[in-house]
Amino acid sequence: MLRRLIHIVAGLQLGLIALFLFGIGAGVLIDAVKYHVLPVVRHVASCQMTELENPAEVNPDLEGEIVEIYRTPVRCDAVLEDEDFGVRVRAAALWRYWVPGEGNREFCPDEVDGFAMRYETAAPEFRMGPYRIKGEQTLRLWRGETLAVQPSRIPEALAPYMREGETHRICLPEAGEQTLVYSAVEDGTPYSFIGRQVGDTLVHDADAAHMAYLSQWRLASGGVWEDVWSSLPGLTYACLLFAGAALLLRMGVSQMSGGFELYRVSFLWPTAVTLSGMLASEVCYAAGNRAGFSGGQAWGDAIFLVTLTVLVGLCLIRRRTTAPEP
Image 1 (cartoon, rainbow, N blue to C red):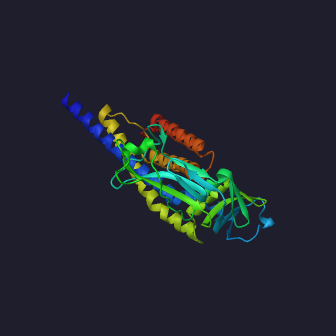
Image 2: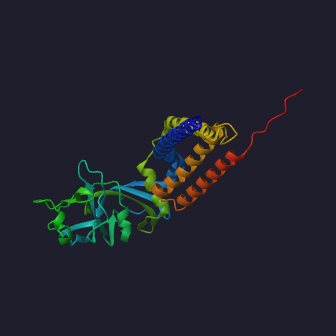
Image 3: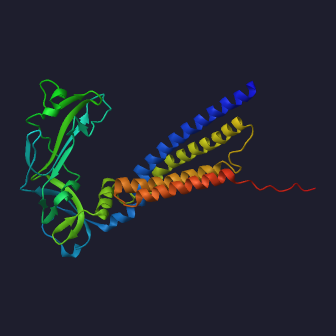
């Protein structure tokens, strides 16, 4: 009985170590996908975008194409305001958000006592050079400087949480210290925008979102292969961690069950399936979350389910054996 108990405890320990290695491997794999694999996968699309620096006129040859205008001043007559804090600024876009104080890891909740903590507003339209951007497309601006705006009053809902003598810092019971931050894309600020050219208008559609993502991870000439080589250490490390997790998991199950084999094939096969499935699904998730690929989440879920199905199949398969020759 004691010996059986020792085997169960040893098996549980091996299982926990396997889960620990699996978690580390998953983290390494996600970082490799985010910083190396996904930019390479989507690099081929970067040639579909035309870059224009502070253009003077609309080029009719680019009609229907994805265009990026950069280092181009924003021209806007709209006055945006946040009445709750008495903020008024002539700008194309205005954001209010909160940043956790030093040493505080808790993010500010969306609401405090019914008061919405985050706020954004945009001009109906504005211009960048000869191009016009309309409505909420304004909020797709990126790659430029923002100007901090100080509030002039405090809403009553937040007065109990404000730090004495300050108008932009609060201390919430459950979220700790939070600092109020305003960002405004003011008139005359050089900025960048990516959209599809339709007449003299730039429209930020799904393809433009893909290009915006690529521009954040821009690869220089020849940088594709550099990124491929840079991804190899992370993928190799993840593969080794998954292999160790698969081996320890099989050993743990064998210890607890008294010799039952979780899978009767080489543990390298579950490792290969896990690495391939998680890599493919993570690329789809990242493409959906960070590059605007509409089907990314669905494809990622489908690949993940297929991976689980194949792993279950590997657990049920039986190794073929040949009878010994007489």
